[in-house]
Image (cartoon, rainbow, N blue to C red; front, side, top):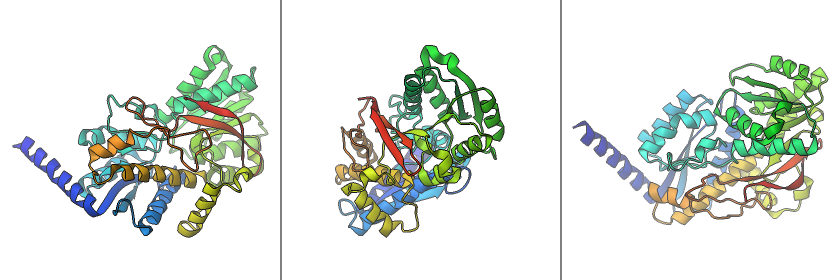
Length: 390
């Protein structure tokens, strides 16, 4: 009797989702609008604004997009609660671009068991690229392992005698970054002279910063979320510690990291980019960024045009819109995941030249490349070649 009840419940939910898809496309999302990682809430706000623009233009294939985004404060327990609500009460067709590694891990098994697409996860954890175990999950960001490996290789190439310090959050995201970074160091692992962690709930990382400075490191990989990345840059400056600082792609926002850290303190910081920086003068005449600025002025007039998270939200929403358009009238969850995994070398207007979106059944990481950039006090300045998987 219990099994029959479960089947009936699942069938009823599928019917509700199907009926909703006749007139609307309902997408679910969780994001930290509050809490220690609230800077990432910008991504979801940008996505909501992009879908509003599409709705104003008539929607997709005659259907409006209903984007249901809920605050989880970057707390996995809250993510579970909010995701279950979106799936079981709101009957969303898919979970789209939910933010954070630990939050998404907390619902990955649940969503896959329910056969609900968990797509374009706003995180670069390696576990999103595991279609064998999690066929309903597709990532978005370059994997943290790949990114960490590329930074280590860059250090060895440009500062072969470097003494390196690393800080990372004590969670899966940080472990992925550090694992890739150590792989990139290879036989030079002894050049890693200080390795420390922090908890997202910590108020500061001041004590860790003192420890790393005292190690004698002259290169510092600040693998941290925006709040702590800003703290790291500012604290290094106040201590008179002047290492080469490397920031990850998840924390290179002008307005969420560099401005709070002090632009003068951020000069010379290096990062990896896969999106066009709206502050970079090289894109002043770029038609795609002109369109983005116009969109920002109309749909997000109070948001920062210097925040790369607004570029990311806009871009990933564009990709989601492409998937939905490709679905045609078949808005089943099976077809949504099928179309998501059929993106092949797609060029998006705000991705850097040479970086394309590719998802295939065996590799479900859409963005697989970055290009190095250095902050000059005003914007990120690109240098070198596009790095990563071809």
